[in-house]
Length: 243
Image (cartoon, rainbow, N blue to C red; front, side, top):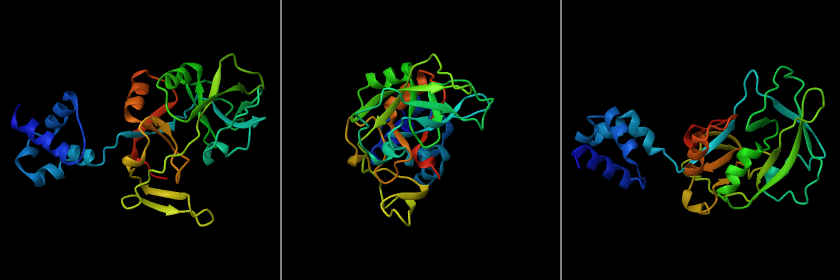
């Protein structure tokens, strides 16, 4: 094992991180001199990024000029139920979400559909992919999607509801603004850091107790979703979330 790899592994171990060979070689290529100096090590952009690396990723819906956006709903339980952390059972048989008339040219369906209000609407293919990983405290509830003419699309969709929040905010390292009226909830976030020791092991998909507007995936499931090339979703590093 060469000196660079040994130094790199020592750096990761000190921060409780692991690596694979590809990542190791990639970072050493980006920073060939960092192993000669601790100061150089900590100033190298690629290594600085590792200091913030989490085992979790935040999911964001991708909107564009063609992908549909959903807004109005029929027979949906109270609109914020998926934020407060509770099961939505019993679930009505005829819940319907309508494409937003403010975006009449946005008609294309994606695997992860952008919904105003923050519901997680996934295609059957994506729902089954997530379900196969068996994340804790997650239910899959069928919904219909109506196009701009009010006709139901011939594709199955599901509301994915991780209904037990994880109390995993690292208050000491996060930089947040708390809501004036709801002091237990975050209003704005400048820097988000998770205390991963407070997250249940099999919580592969969840919302945060104090910041339920975002959806978090464990990195292994997030990476698998990326590799499967599902549409309408992007996964970003936790420390890059700003609201």
